Length: 235
Image (cartoon, rainbow, N blue to C red; front, side, top):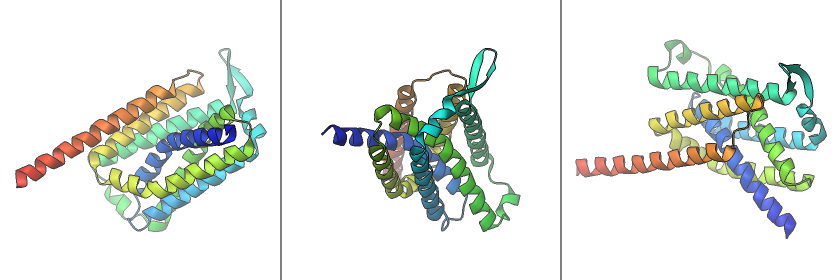
């Protein structure tokens, strides 16, 4: 019974921690032609699964990332800190760039970019962020249990669930421009959280996820009100 409870709890946590990953994959895959988007999302999530299982299988090596490499102003700096800071800054930069494109429109030069190079670029960005998000996921798993099969099973189940629902989430986000900007704003917030965590400033993740879900609920309600008002106006 304890094993089942640990598996269910860890699976739920992995799904929650994977939401920001799905949002990022949905946003960057949207810059591909529509027929390429499902394949990019699938490849991104499969690579995320492979990376997380590989990291879990080499858990002692991953945990060594937290060992200090050097000190800056009496603050120890580890590989994990460097990865979190770099990943956070990358996420902030990428999300800000995407918001700029949404507000100003795509540059004409990007329209001539080949489909192949665009696909490779998108998948590369997904893989880079998968590595960052994987660290958070793995450290959570290690904190919950030391049973490797349970950790791997929870990761596999959570990733299968994300594969099943990523398409619907992506379409929903892409069909509503205000949700796209809101999602990108969340990614900036998460990127900031990763960066400050890299300099040993702990931000309770519960506050972040509460703000994310609360804002999403308000936005969804707003969309429903606008839809009803539009239908009433046209009738």
